[in-house]
Image (cartoon, rainbow over all chains, first blue to last red; front, side, top):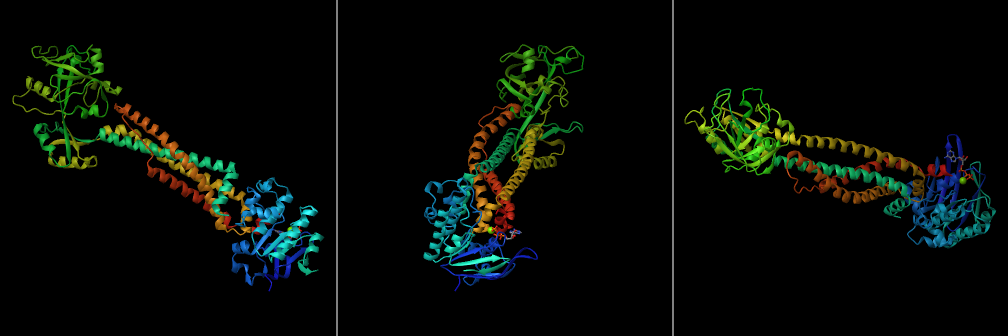
Length: 210
Length: 429
Ligand SMILES: Nc1ncnc2c1ncn2[C@@H]1O[C@H](COP(=O)(O)OP(=O)(O)OP(=O)(O)O)[C@@H](O)[C@H]1O
Ligand SMILES: [Mg+2]
């Protein structure tokens, strides 16, 4: 049984101009999904709907058989999914440690070292880190939440090839060992190769290509 | 992460904002607490004045209708009326004092007219009207007592002009005619007290007395009686009367009007009315100041509220992105509002902890100087007068500050409630 089901979801920002048209998707735990498609095709939009940050114009999203509404917005965002934003969305007056602590009671250093951040960097203001380092803090925060579904929007966009590989490996490991479901929006071939299932979003339609 | 933890991190990291907010709180709290302490001080000064300058009911002979004189008997009858605490009697006489250099008080051009003055007696000199409203204060020597037969008090002006000082004597005589006085019957007093005229206008002719108050000599009832008895104009066997009437003090100041009404009913032949002018005059500026202060504090409260509400609303608007992030990682809007509230309250608390002792330290001085001002005006010595902000005022201030803080947060919370995480977060990407 899928952990998350996207059923017949349509979305439009402006009436009559749908970004998503009847998207259907079943997500299984333990697998890594890759979604790609041209810029502006609606990948972030789809992820936001799955993350419970917005509601579809029509159709529904189920988590463990329940709708997000039934679970409750905050509860859903805290315990069911975790998000890695394309633009990181870190709290700018906090350190990486504190940002990670927002989603977990565990020691944040555990997650920050996993993504390759040094102890000293973990205690600096996040705004004093490089883009790549910030991106890794965002990933650590998502991993730390312990939610079964991880939604990552271009998580390797700002990383060099080696670091990117490490991050993909880490996400994959999370899927395998912690039985999580990882959804990655990415243009990178490396990600597509590492993923179990690859989907292409174009003209509002989602097609499986692998 | 708990709301308090996030709030503390915010306060610690966003120092400029925290300091500005802290400054707003501190200034307002200080002003409010100081305002309260001044209010408190002036209220205390008012009470103090009330005690030392009580209102009374005056009982006078109704001369117009040829009513009965105010005598010892009248006094004894009034003294036992219910609600009456104390009765102070006053009398007067007039004599010629050839050696005194008096202030010029009359248009009468007769040679001796300028040497005539009033002798005034009062059972309790402290309660004599001019001493009570501080027109006069004792400058040297001592206040005249009832047992001071043969002694007198004189003003500093007249004693100075006449070259007299404590221990010297003054002698008065009956006037026989416009030019002569009865040298055969001198009345002599030793000066035991010299009073100062505090109110300069008292050196001028007083309407009520048709002469300069500073020319007055104070002597005892017994001595007035002696003069009365020797008075060639007096009818034989005439009872001694209190020409300047009685001052009747109620047990409770609040009952002044009531006691006056009762006396009027029971003693319809006398002129009876309340006298509270001395207190009104002395406490006037303080009541004025209290009113002004209350207005100022209200205005300040409004300004503070507006500033706080605007500042919070503006800052919350600037923090929309941050709040979107909190929402996206599963914090509720309630958590965000509580964080805002905690931030404000923690800063307010720090301001309270500083404003309280500071205002307490300063308010003692304020109370002291206020009291000194009254003391100077009323000719009293400034004794211990320590005014602190009352605990009630402190808690009221804190309560109001917290209330306004909550209000400001609630108004800002409306913005938070309208937040839509997708809109906020996608706007940034
Ligand atoms: N808040 C919004 N209001 C109106 N239109 C929007 C809004 N956000 C996105 N869009 C539009 O919806 C479409 C899909 O946007 P989305 O951000 O999902 O694309 P994307 O696939 O993530 O693109 P990219 O690869 O560049 O991140 C775009 O055409 C975009 O202009
Ligand atoms: Mg996108």
